[in-house]
Amino acid sequence: MAGNNIKKISIQSFTRRAGRIVLITLSILLACILILVGVLQAWSPGKPKPFQGENGKVLASSISEKIHISINGVEQGMFIKSKNNANPVLLFIHGGPGMPEYFLTQSYPTGLEDDFTVCYWEQRGAGLSYSSDIPPETLTEEQLISDTLEVTDYLRKRFGQEKIYLMAHSWGSFIGIQAAARAPEMYNAYIGIAQISRPLESEKLAYKYMMEQYTIAGDKRMVQRLEKFPITEMDIVPNSYRSLRDEAMHNLGIGTTHNMKSVVSGIFLPSWKCPEYTLSEKVNIWRGKWSAYSTNMWNQMIATDLTAEVPNLDIPVYFFHGIYDYTCSYTLAKDYFEKLQAPLKGFYTFEQSAHSPLFEEPEKMQHILQKDVLVGVNNFADTK
Image (cartoon, rainbow, N blue to C red; front, side):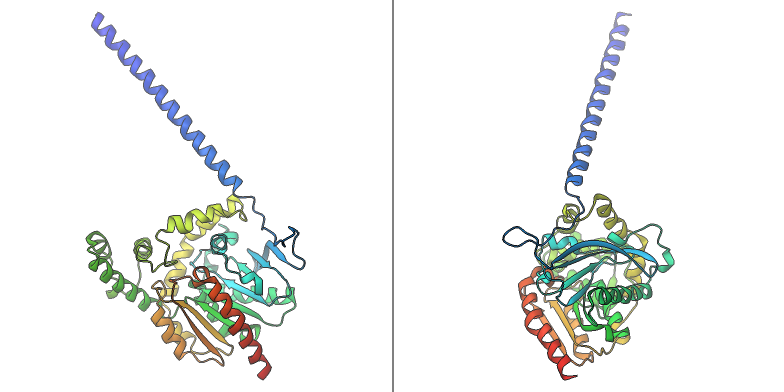
């Protein structure tokens, strides 16, 4: 009987200790969560930072704002930034699908605001413009082209400029070049960064390159993972392949930037640190990115050959492309550029860049924009 009592006491004692350990663990976990939320809140005041001079005062005629306006019946958000609001207006169409890029300007300043009044519009269903109430049937290629034209018209009227510049990156170039073809009278020029051309063929070239590089490197595990998706033999790019694709590309320096080895450290974490978004807006960045919208748009893009859809433009055209870019094939973009009919054209190779020369070589891009694009467009306008 004494032995049984000792066992009962031992079990009770163990249970009490285990309960205390669980309680302490839960308390620590809760405290960590509260600290994390507090840090995120501190990082998320949600107010755009004004442009200041050397004296610390806000620059006269500068603009730094975050606004929401109704675009084709849906409230959509944008950042508008300029050191001088009399500068020519530039509408930036972000990539993705569903992935805003404004937050990256904190880590990778572009200098665009020196020469342009830049509108970083966040597309229907993405970032500032994310809402679960948006009708799914409106999340289409055609709708985004229409939205682009509507945002363009808003900017023209607001800043009193007959024409604006249209700059589009990656997925944005799929929408942007079609918008420019639909309404060339609204644009001074079209600027494509990592221009999409034949996306399915681009994916096959990227897959072939990755298989070759990982085979040479002796990375059998990555080769085996890639072999599960024989992209070169497929007419689609499965959604289940895309996360592996991103990992494999960034490991080889052919993804977002040549030096970015991880989407987590290079994109995910910076999105949470940008102070110009509120915490709920940051959550919405990733809700939009991981939504069915992103997948649907991706599938529409893959099935389209832009070289057939947009064989000519009636305005000056400039392509900026990183030599290491396999996310959107450099070779195919150059081929598209050579065949594209336009009154004035320029193709610029960025030797230190992969998919994002805007962020990787901003000084070179700024120089080209100042000396070639702005001057060329002005000269072109004078000859008309």
